[in-house]
Length: 161
Image 1 (tube, one colour):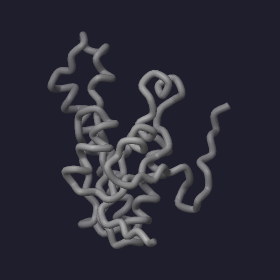
Image 2 (cartoon, one colour):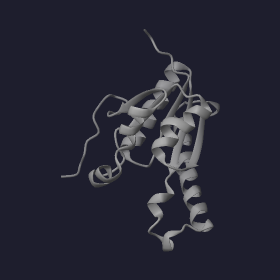
Image 3 (cartoon, one colour):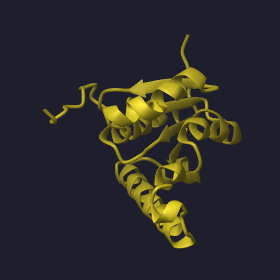
Image 4 (cartoon, one colour):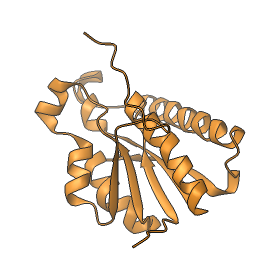
């Protein structure tokens, strides 16, 4: 059975794994004549210890602006590489990344595939809060592909020793 994905969601967080997933999602969307939604979810809970336990409007605005700039750069790169500008949308959301990605966003935008990097966190963070990609795989209301390789199917080289 062949699956023809028309609306692909790729969440990104700035990690190498997320950017590999983005590049592969662009390729899959091009092959399927599909639309790509690129999403960053800003989890304000991670900033609770900063700024006296509260985020003021200026900090929230700056976080949103930085995320928007990052997503625009990804989009511009994809368009420069031949992806149609009308076939890619960027989104910044606030909330719990796990539930926004696996449930809320795909319900609103009717995505039929999520392509997500294997992990964007370090081992300690994964141990404490759990992997977003693991949660999405178990709870998403659509197909999920965990991306572990680049567009040439080569594993990401980890230079950390």
